[in-house]
Amino acid sequence: MVFDRPIGKNQGIQFPIARAYANVEAANLMRYKAAALFDEKKPCGAEANLAKLLGADASWEAANVCLQTFGGFGFAAEYDVERKFRETRLYQVAPISDQSDPVLHREHVLGLPRRSRRAEPRTQRREEAAQGHNLMDSLRQLCASVSLR
Image: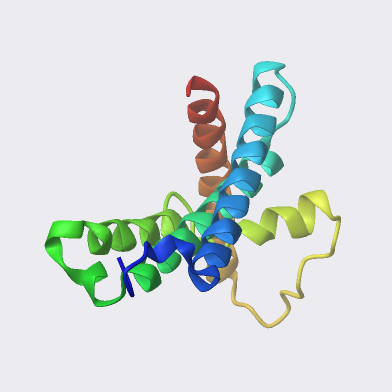
């Protein structure tokens, strides 16, 4: 209650919550698309990767809106908002970083060229190739887990 009425009656509270809800639903739709492709035994790596990216961003935005709505009480242990806020950060770094997510789309979905590698030493290229292999393993695991839910 704020000013003798529920806080949710304020448009300043309603709009960010509605936007966060829309982003969560968009991520959910992409998750279902990836799962449907996987169930049909069709390639689904790009869709699973996009679902992970959208889901991570949507959860982070929802956590920010929640913390903003609760204000100082968002950090009080009895409301459990702070813990959930910290946990949403995990989705942006695991199983792969949200910085790596656009790489798959840039090269494999959009067909854009890779950046120039002339100045990079060989060891760095080998490490990046190993990370790319780990990325595909992570996507396969994500694809498999999405269809089980």
